Structure formats: C-alpha cells, structure tokens
Length: 126
Image 1 (cartoon, helix red, strand yellow):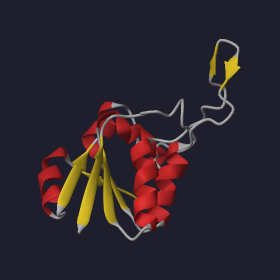
Image 2 (spheres, one colour; image 1 turned 60 degrees about the horizontal axis):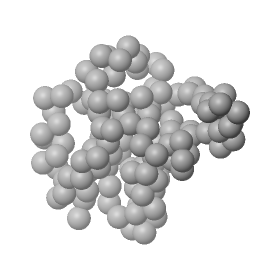
Image 3 (tube, rainbow, N blue to C red; image 1 turned 30 degrees about the horizontal axis):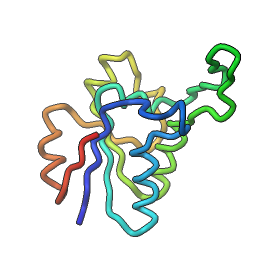
Image 4 (cartoon, rainbow, N blue to C red; image 1 turned 90 degrees about the horizontal axis):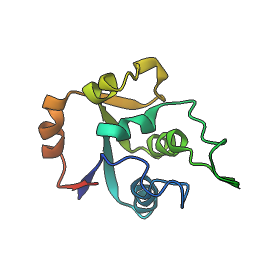
C-alpha cells in the first residue's frame, strides 16, 4: 500500500519535540517497511529551505538547546528513497526560490495535486 503524506500545518510540536511529528513518524514507518511519499504544501513548504537555523531561539531565559532541523529531516527522507514533493505556487507565494531548497525535492503545481493523490492507495493529510 502506497501512502501520500500531505503536510500542510508547519512547525507542529517543533518547540517541544525538535521534530515535526509527521516527518518523524514517516521516517519510522519507512524504516518498518512502509511505502510513502510526502507532499509539502502551504506553510510546510518552508521545511525544504536549506540553511535554516533556529539555534538562537529562546523563551525568556530558557534557551532551546536542541533546535529543530527540518530541512535536514526532510533531506533524510529523500535519502531513504521517499519521494518528497512541494507545491511550486506555495513556495513562490512565500518568496522561496528553487535555489534555496534542499536537493531532491520535486516541484508540482497545485493543479497536479489530484493526480499525485490518485497515484497512491491512501492519502493522509496533516
């Protein structure tokens, strides 16, 4: 069974857990033999931007000592053979240029999302 994970809500639990929960669980399920693809859309297209640095994040006197590395986490998905797509128009709407994205991401247009969903047995939208 091939599953498409659509990640639209960005930075979910990244303060508490240092990882996006859906990116993390996709890593785990792929390691258990699952067949996954990922689509980054909406604000989650930011996950593909390389050179992100949240190391200076603090809340009052409390420093975030283990900041998230979402671009690194997404890059590891592609290293595992997971196809990671992003919505081109969502990146453009946020001023994200192709050259600022990590390697291995596949752009698709908004009009192509339905076709991508059709190539999967299940679609999980987060």
